[in-house]
Length: 589
Ligand code: FRU
Image 1 (cartoon, rainbow, N blue to C red):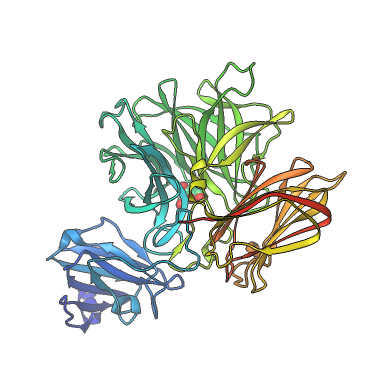
Image 2: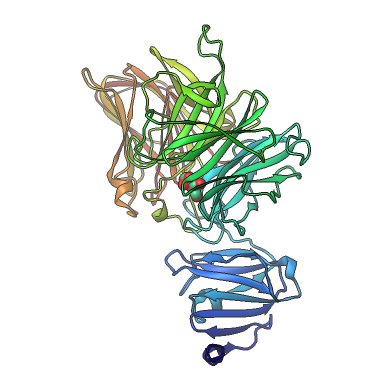
């Protein structure tokens, strides 16, 4: 009783009215905003550097989201604005309890209602032909599924800010894998926990009982350890209902996440990471799962956590192959081939409830760049294995200089197994759809470079383009992209007798915006098979470069944050080099 009386005394009434009848009451370090819901959204001003606040939204006794929402509510000025949908409560009184806040913060005083959320979030680093979230944070691609002519791309999302945390599944869709449309969030944190990564499958035969062709999302629940949950959608993947019997798998482990599901011989098979290994489970109905085996001990790289597996069947590798082969992907952080995160792969067979790797020279890496992580392949695409990865790295991702959103995905790549010498590799071939976005092509006849040669490309480009050429040379040679601010990136090939052939990407001078030493100081090295010529394809977007060598036999994905778009190319060599088949095209119609 005494405590209550003290609490009431401490409460200070700050403001009495606004056009929505707003009242702001301060109670210790809690601010309570009471208002009448009149419009679709509450718009909150956010700033990355602000202290983290917890918000509870109540309508009478009802906690309208069932849990607290975390936000970095702006103190002095807004970096971005984020919406909270209150449309269901129109006409009712809402109490918003904001913990650890001050009533005079900009995030409180400038909080407003609106029927639209239509900010021009078209900043300098907004990608033109890659998926990026309209606002807020993303990491891994989730729930990649093709259904009814639509590619669904969900993503790890914090819709309330530009930093990782408080994870949802955001949602975008595309009909061509190039142009992405933002949709409503499909999975939100609930009383079981936050929603971490996972996949989506089409239940064509109604094994779940939810109905034929229902989409089923299988995801990690983070809260009270990590567990596996499912949710289903009967409207083609635009809204999902979490299963009442969640969690469907619980192993009482802290690191047990990122389920990937496929069908093998009429059974559902799930791969899940557990620390530095994978576990496999089988099910007839996606709800009841039995453990069948483990994979990973003693094979591949274990220099970090294993995360985000994916598995898909591949055509026979040679005539003697009679058993179905599979490729298994798993991401590893923090010690990929160039430090940071990377995706490793295995080629093998499915035997007695587990994956058995063929004897190849592991670890094998899908991409040698710093910025291709947590990638998985689409389900329900027939014989195509269409891969999309998260284009950033945990080491520096919280500091990259975009303002209204943070991060995005790679271009789609068709993965294929290819012979290389006596062995096999998984190549990443840019998905053919991506080339349909090209326009204003510039071409050049074959030319010979001695020393260096520099020319403009796509004058006044807006940061989104594609360049193709072949390089024939030996020794050290390569090319640079530059702007007139003195910013540049360099790719240096080195094919020297007695040394491992390689191409090295240097982004130390890529930008005058210095945000993280680990980003700018390291060279990114990609080993090559020694040869006398290479085919090069380079996809550049406003904050990314994706280099494909010899139709995707080697790949390097690296972010860039130049102050101005590069519009000059310089070829250089220590002897003579022939550049053939040169073309440059704008992207992002
Ligand atoms: C990989 C990852 C996953 C996890 C998710 C959380 O980047 O760490 O293992 O499910 O991100 O956002």
